Image 1 (tube, one colour):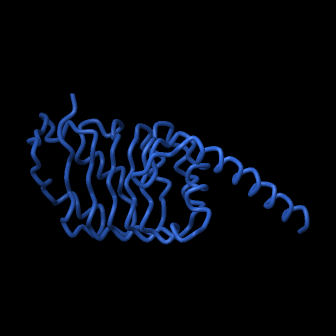
Image 2: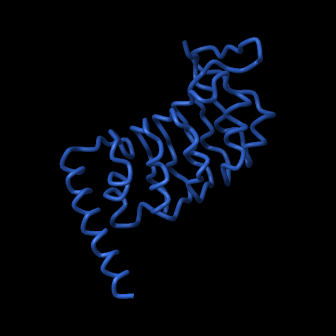
Image 3: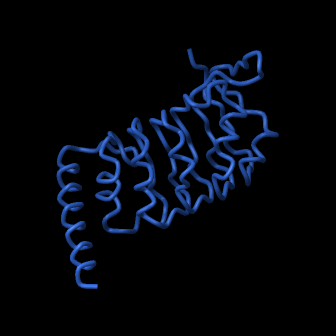
Length: 180
């Protein structure tokens, strides 16, 4: 049903609009286009570029994929992305999201991805948020459906610890609000 990933990695793309002029790399499986010159794929690789923001992500997905609403695997690793943009939450069928090796620095932005009901695998290591002690607990708590985070399985014990962390963190926050 779906073809090979559309691979736009290592193309020196600085903005997603730049991607529209690029031809995807050929992989082991041949890329085929449909009659509208779009690819019947549910995977898009935009890794190892210089992308700063995701402003034109929907347009880019629609430009390359025959069924953009079916995008299930998105690789944005090793770019210069500093924020988890809300546009990612529009990719309702997304199951795998690679964001490692970027410049994401606000841990709470991970919470936005909780809107993705099928997201089961995410990578965020190699971002500034990884230096936060609560990094993994926060990720697992914000995305309870995760099976893997940073290429490592999420264990039952981690889920329990993340829930305890979340509950204690929520109490601390509400106490601070009451005092102010």
